[in-house]
Length: 118
Image (cartoon, rainbow, N blue to C red; front, side):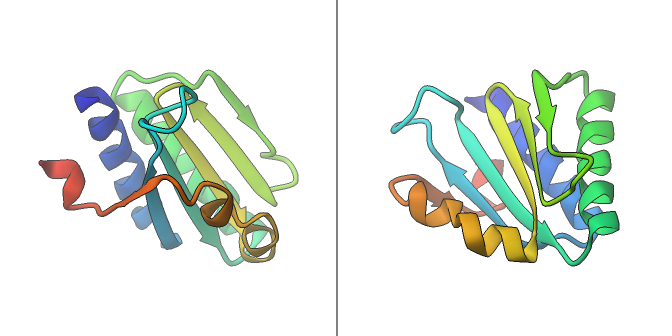
């Protein structure tokens, strides 16, 4: 779990670097075997959404983490970045509201950036 906290912190910093909006961190470790954390964020347009995903991939790559899978980059409506223990969802604003992952995964525990440092 410590490793996934470190990865999540890197993700948050990379997203903030590209001015991601409404960053949400959900601890899903107790309700799913998929991952420890979901990170959900959105951007204002296709270019920003892709830049956010690029920033995450670059930052995690520098730290030695390779993605298991990345989907949706071309359309940039919803880019899904699977890093095994951490899954990053980068949305356009419209698609984030439509898919509403926070509602679907409401049993996950909301986490703050500060919580990751403990």
